[in-house]
Image (cartoon, rainbow over all chains, first blue to last red; front, top):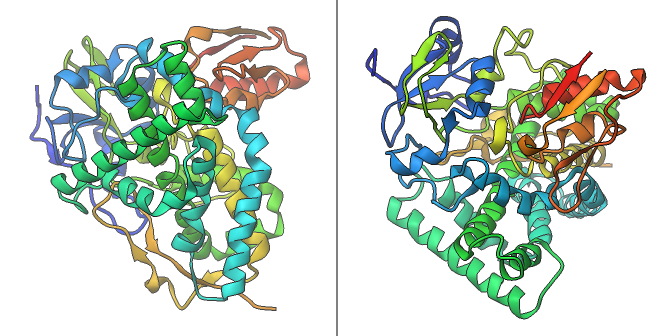
Length: 400
Length: 64
């Protein structure tokens, strides 16, 4: 029931800017018609309250996407065994198997190890001297080391992971055929790792999940494979990009950067504000299908129609956040939606939070006078992938 | 204050444990939240309100 011609989505914006179209939509048309690069047209929800409603109301289903031409950013649809396409209670069964690795207690136990990894990376950057590229020298290897150790995959495979992860989030960087090839390589690699864990059982997340499959039949082989691939790729790409985005924002907000340096205990709060502020992805997808007619933002979404939710827009909703377009590291307002909302709220968020806190603390304590190597213009931005952030971020700092 | 925790809704995000560690914990085996007390002391109410607001599954309801 398209009331108007759908608008081409995603809206474009440079660097970490957010398209002004979102503000206009929140004000005038909180639910509007959009056409994503692939799939059928959808409703786009831009307000905070509507976003939370659509993402948590059981009348909206992810699973319905399997029977539809799901609106999406990438050519391939969500795999049928992925957590991201399941509804409760199927979803709960599978999610709870992996959730044990990401409890607040478990990730806090990991904090000292994460701090050591970050400290080692900082040592190497300092030994090599400026300029350093934050992306390759710190932002990527930190979360890759962490998720590799947590899952039980060899860190030596990291370069392959980077390519596979990029293929996963590629919109135009790789052709559909190349992306499919890389995804197949990742699956083959994971199949090998599972076989290895079966032969030599180990006490890591792959070991746990293999035991849940073999001893209790709590998930299928395909679900196991898809989940492990998702955990590996989802486990570092987003965190790595956030670390670079956070540093970019600190360097472009020198007063707040200095204030945070002077009071490192405010880092956890600063991380939450940075999470609210960064538009981490170019657009949105993972449509929720209405199972019956539902009223949202003054519009009746008809049964069978998909809604996509713009989390970045919700995080800039003027009715919830004061001066939403200003980064304010002292802000304490409503919870942001950077990790989503509802049943699919980011499984790895407790781990991501600790990694982001450790990353900032390490960089702020070990690198006095941290700055762009020459100028902000040297930052090279990613393109053709779902995440937004620097591809290269050359840094310099004060030497003793 | 009386807390109602709707366990089947819980998605194991652990946000309540961060907001109110004296009132919420998580099961080791699957991350599902555990309500430690239904009637928390007054000095814990603010943290509990934050936990209820932040819960991505809306699994925490408060009667005040």
